[in-house]
Length: 264
Image (cartoon, rainbow, N blue to C red):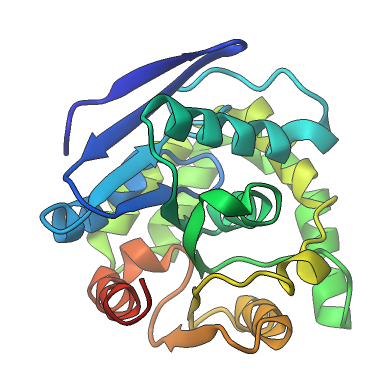
């Protein structure tokens, strides 16, 4: 991976990596994670593309978020766009996994002129309740926010969850052991306010939707996005779950490359 760089912002600093040359791919990571989440994508694509992997504000090495819950995602998206402006990048393919997919959607609807293509993995576009299962899931998440302060318990949980996927397991254990808990909770609360479903239905750029087969709820969420984006492609990755780019990097990379070759 290329050397980590830093960009000064009015409200702090954003850390990022910048590798390769060509069409720009911007990868945005999951909740509490950092740009290192995409090491396997950097390795796979750096000889054909320019790969930008920032640590979103409030995550990794980047500065803390100093805004209200409702401003969190806009603040993170604006910082990513500021980074591209600083690097004289006028358009890119945005690839977001999980929480990063939410930030990518915000960028796509608010800064669409920067978006050459959109790849959303293991994410969702709104938190509207459509079923009892979704209601129970939302209630469980809201009731368990305190778990983000229990690093030992989180490490044990991900060690079990990612058993059989050693690279993902090692990375997630490290992340959970060093979690910026207060900022993660702030971002998790911000998710409760999102609703991009109607807005993304107006997007015109090529869009690829990827989701792991092992999480039925996320599969349903991604199919809901596909319903409002009938021209998008949706691919279910077998034996995978969030984050699919780490759990099944072989299949994720294959589907991403096919999309880039055919549509970008």
